Image (tube, rainbow, N blue to C red; front, side, top):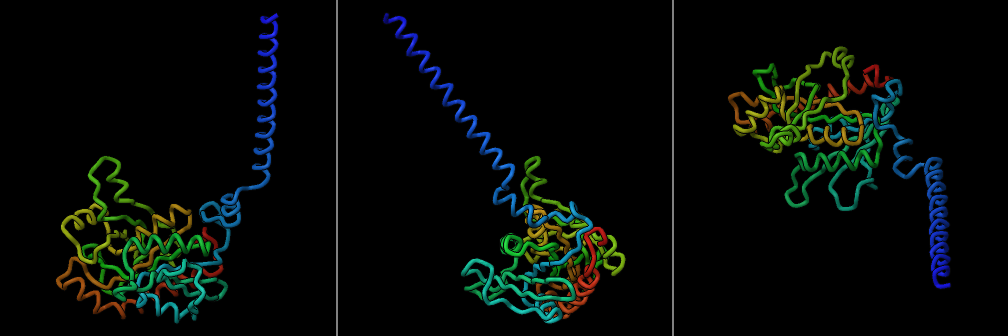
Amino acid sequence: MDKYYFYFCELRLIGLCFFYYCLCLLYWRKVEKTRSITPSHDDKAEASVDFNGESTPERRISSILFIIAMQTEASPLVEKFQLAEEPDSVFPKGVPWVKYSGKYKDLNISIVCPGKDASLGVDCVGTVSASLLTYASIQALHPDLIINAGTCGGFKEKGASIGDVFLASDVSFHDRRIPIPVFDLYGVGSRQSFSTPNLAKELNLKVGKLSTGDSLDMSPHDETAIIANDATVKDMEGAAVAYVADLLKVPAIFLKAVTDIVDGDKPTAEEFLQNLAAVSAALEQAATQVVNYITGKSYSQL
């Protein structure tokens, strides 16, 4: 009797387990079916805005985001495009970032700057501010195209002169030294900018490679890395913007105007300050030509 009772209890236990297994299976299938019909929050964001211009080459560009490190560099463009500063910022409360926006021809144009350091009152230049600002701006504005415009140092050995405006073909870091296999490549972080062969040809822009670091001057270690990067110009933001843009699949181009000759005779800081205003005006002219060319065009036409 005890033996049969034991078998009976064992069968009941197996039956209950099988019953709950079936319930779980049915519930899981229902969840999966719901997921396939209703996209997640991330899927909706990705579906509503296709950040990857290369996947939709015939879509016309309707919004441009300029990321500019210094107010002196940005002001001529703000005036040219008649943009207005937005007092109710889309950015988190307390950050110094500044946003200007408006309509130019058929393009929605935004210019964002990292603003002034709260303690020292100087522009928040460098890769940290640039990467944070780029990420926040993409999340808030969903631009079709990023233009990182600014001034740079140029190398006369590579054909750069004061006032030249370059369209960067590639961007890399020169001060992230990690002498471990594969990590060294990560440190350099080499990336191609969004390809715009027609734009470069039509506007007769100089094209060269851009190298980025967090120092205005150039140490011997930096020089070695810059030569290895085959760079024509160097700045303090480009590769950081490129990293975030690549991460979030937003096409980005880099427009850099030469304020100082890195391999020249004058001290870099002195030459930079001497030429900043005049070269910012040259940058404005080139950026305006770029925007005029982009107007009404699709990615594939650039």
